[in-house]
Length: 264
Image (cartoon, rainbow, N blue to C red; front, side, top):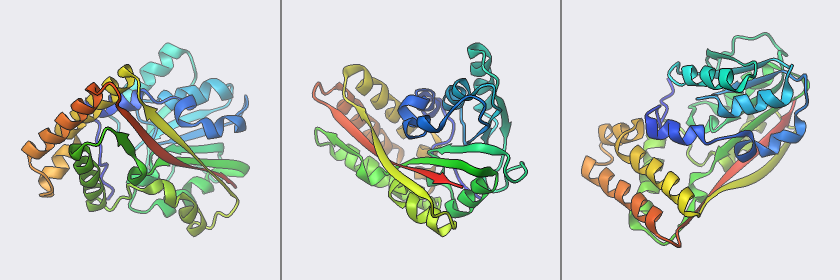
């Protein structure tokens, strides 16, 4: 059974709410048009899902998540925005849809958390119509870089990788997307990259506080302690390093992502 490294604590959802189609699925936007049916796997609080729905209406849009916790918020967002989206709990390894149900099957930051991303890609391709696309985007944590140098953030990156791999997940998923698609028998792929950058005072404050919170009050923190990989005191040191970085007037951080459009 898969273990979600981040969990759904408030500092995590704070980050997820920031995600939009523009900042997290730009590589997919040219494929969208009104009337397409879209499945968003691992939708979380639904911010990307709702953005996609606004672009493909009156097409059917379904957002699935393995956890029910964020879906109430997703439904409230859709209601406020006035777009028609269905949200449901679902299993990415066993999607409850017939073959060829959707024109676009999308998953953002999902494959990195799965013990069998190849099986998930096969299942996503199964419910995608011939000529449609499976679109996946995942961070490559090892390619994350920042300024100024901070031993506490070095330790954060090391620890995050340890916790993720203890969960049989792959934190450097971005570089592996092509290989996973090929292993799933999917050969018509277009690979790209894009990055998130946090450099303005507001961006640093938001991102630094989000990760400071995750370092001490999230599933990641609980797992790090439970697995014997860090103590609460060490996690507090990581949180302090994030706040120090956020306060640095010349602070900068970039996160590289791999992206894949798979033609089915």
